[in-house]
Length: 194
View 1: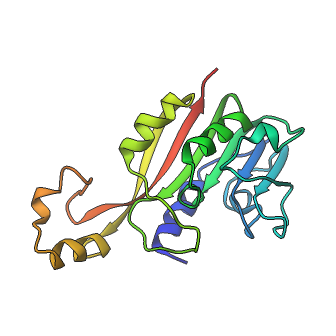
View 2 (view 1 turned 60 degrees about the horizontal axis):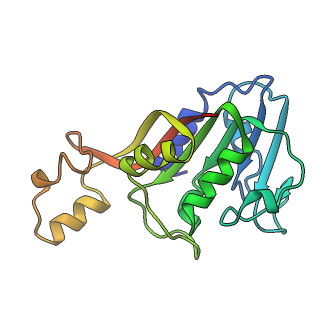
């Protein structure tokens, strides 16, 4: 298992699902992934994926309005969207769909890579802290915390800058470097507003 995935697993282990209604969106063939990593037993746990060949409870494409694809579903107190957003070509629509699935004051846990090689034929986007801080509030979420997933230098980004003859000191503040560490992805915790 990757270093990045281990950091996600450590974070999930701190979340208690006891007696909660939970939706796990974009879980692919790892249905109930978050359920296995978190503490407690949820009241209800629903899985979502776009492809019919995945064994999930609901099938819909996050790139299109969920209201047209999902007939009845209880609003979740906790919504997970783990390592999925980079595979969506319309992230604004996807976040609006996550908002639709989440009940008022419910919690969204969203993870996405920042520095990561292509890892699927449908691997479209990378996200920054600024993206989550700026976009989530515009789409009805209050950002509670953004936890960076970090890697040590030298790494993919460090090697790129070295090969390009660029100085790391110039980008330290801009890209979130902390000593020999830098952000390779983010874990976002947000609350659904009204």
